[in-house]
Image (cartoon, rainbow, N blue to C red):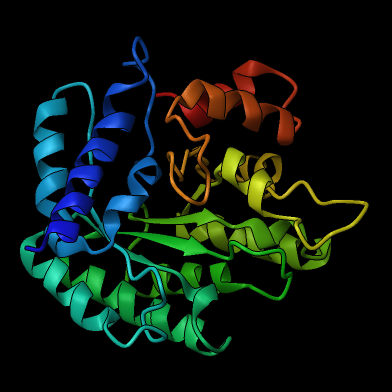
Amino acid sequence: MGRIEAAADRRGCRRARTPLLRPRGLEGTACDPHACRHLRRPADRRRCVARGEAKKSRPTSTLQLVAFPQDGYYRSPNAAKNLERALDKGVDVVGGIPHFERTMEDGPRSLRALCEIAENAGLLVDIHCDETDDPLSRHIEALAYETQRLGLQGRVAGSHLTSMHSMDNYYVSKLLPLIAEAGVHAVPNPLINIMLQGRHDTYPKRRGMTRVPEMRAYGINVAFGQDCCMDPWYSLGGADMLDVAHMGLHVAQLRAARRCGSASTR
C-alpha cells in the first residue's frame, strides 16, 4: 500500500469513528448508515477499516457496509468487478445509483442486476434513487417493481427520492401505492437534500426533499438519514440525528415533533 493510500485509509478510519461516537447522549437514536457513505468506495480495502471501527463502537451502534457502485454500475468500467470483490470480502448491503447511469434505460437495467445480486446473496438493498430535480427520473418505480418481482419486500430502501418533489401530482398518486405495496423503505436526507437540490432554480426555489407526509399517509416506512458527514458534498454534516430530525420536521412541514419522532428514532 502506497503512502497516499495509507493516508487515505487513516482518514477513512477517523471519519468512520466520527458518526459512530460523536452524538454523545443519543444512544436511543438511529444513526442512519448514510452518515458513513464515504467509506463505501472502494469497498474492498476500507471494509477492513470500517469493520474495525464497528467493533469499537459496539454495543451502542450498528454499522452496515454497502457495496456501492458510486459512479454507476454500468457507467463505470470497473464497477461490476469492484462490486464482486466487495461481495467476496463480505458486505451487508448492495447499493446502486440508477439516475447516474449514462442513459435513462440503463437505470432500470442496473436496478434489475443489483437487486438480483442482492437476492442471490441474501443481502439488503440501499439505492441512491432519483437524487435529482428532474421529474422524469422515475427509477423508484422500477425499484418497487424489482422488489416485488424478487420477493425482497422489507429488504429494500430507496434513498433521497428528491425527484418526487418535482413530479406532477397525478403520477405521484400512482407511484406512492406501488412503493407501499412493495414494502420499499424511504430514506430522505433533509440536510443534504435541501443543500444540493434546487440549485438550477432561480425563484421560486424548490425545497429539495421528497414527499414525506404523503408517504407516511400511505403507510410507507420513512427514516431520515444524515448521508454526508464532513465530506466534499456536505462539510457541515455532524451525524447528529436530532439536527436531522429538526430540519426534516421544518422542511416537510410536519408541524408536530411527535410526527417526526418515528422517522428519526427507534
